[in-house]
Image 1 (cartoon, one colour):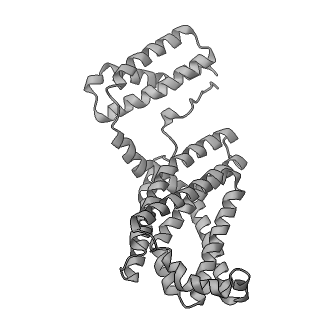
Image 2 (cartoon, helix red, strand yellow):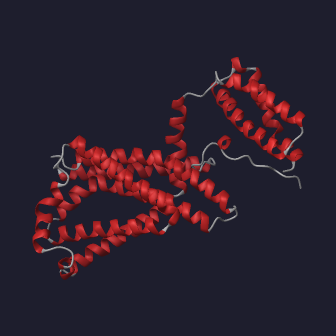
Image 3 (tube, one colour):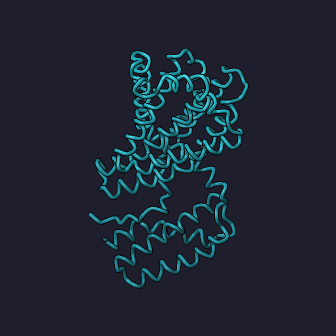
Length: 332
């Protein structure tokens, strides 16, 4: 590392930190947040200088600045609610928007596979014989499919659904780096959805199928597509890192991927509540379906309004710059 270049590039930030530290009792809210960010960032600068073997004077001066700033920071921490609101209003929607081509493509392919499986079941009844007996089919169509949504108390069922869906999303997200396992899970779930659709539609129970699947299924599957896309992007960043090194691409994409987990859990909590309390309710089918459609539209608007705005401002779902590795500039 070129120590002189590093010092020259980061000196304005050190001067700014010193200025904010001196006037700590008169800081505005924005300046307090800036003080915390600079304190964390300059800490990484100090670590980089020590690793590079910089002269003791420079290290001592920066260590003193860090010590002074630490005292100021202990009384200037930004409220937790600001971090939470920034995550849900900026970071998470930005990550969703940046990865939109991935999860939209995955969703389209998923529904095409499900539609193909349903068509096979409807157009070729003999296929059913290799899957289920006629008695099992009749039991599924007449009772089991609808009973699944009402056989347990709503609150217990909602919690169970949330845990199940969160587990599936976590699996496809975590295994995405290996690519094949996530693709297999998506394929298997698409076939399962298509088979159930084909059986219900083929026995004139399309109204029951779509009336029970649509309220929660639209948003629920979208969350699974998002989780799958995040995982697959992580795996693809290792194969095709672009202008970055493989480690840089993996680190950047990995941070954004892990950062999406909390947001996905919140979305799946909403779908669990809908599936537990709306899907099996006595509300008219049109109302239940309408709730599901509105939930999906709300998600799309969330991504395209807040996400696009954040992405245009330079956000892409990564952690704060202060929490990333220090970059060591070099002189020409």
